[in-house]
Length: 254
Image (cartoon, rainbow, N blue to C red; front, side, top):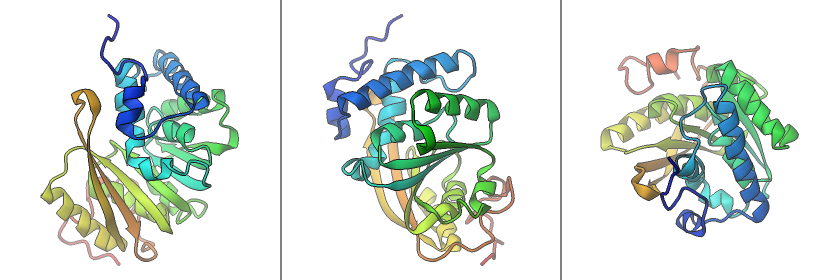
């Protein structure tokens, strides 16, 4: 049954709500990305959000609204990383919207990264988009990645303290981590602040958004380093999610 919702297709109202509009070439790229995602999703289970407003709101809009400041200077050279990219979001949407950026997309599931790499190649991103198949704990300890990114982002990856441990080690001193969250509560903030203290980082800004078509509440937390991240972080594979920073009482790493 066809999607008859007002945001089933990318009309002007969608971009007005976002506060940014793609040019004609970028719009063609978004449409091409949707077609590629539909094709690959028929072969590899990447995501259920591929058609109509599932794609335009839950994928494109939700990927881009946290980046509104960056969207105002799209040609600026930036090194960005998308942690836990899954089916390629937010990374591939960001690659379209920020043509000056170089992006690294990381996921541990090989069938997903193979599909995402193929989509990036089909769209002609070339060397501007690099896809890595590995756990992000390894990425954060890799000298070619650690402390080198201007923007590190993660959407639907894990609890906020876990995501902070993934993102902060990847950032250069002037860089910012973008935590894409749903609803946000005081207890969430307390746990995040405890983790950031251990990581020698801090919160920079909190923003809230109600997605169009009653698709739910979103929160963005921007974080940034205050000093070099202690070498102990990120911890060994699986440890950040098993024992989140700021949650266990006996973490005394420095």
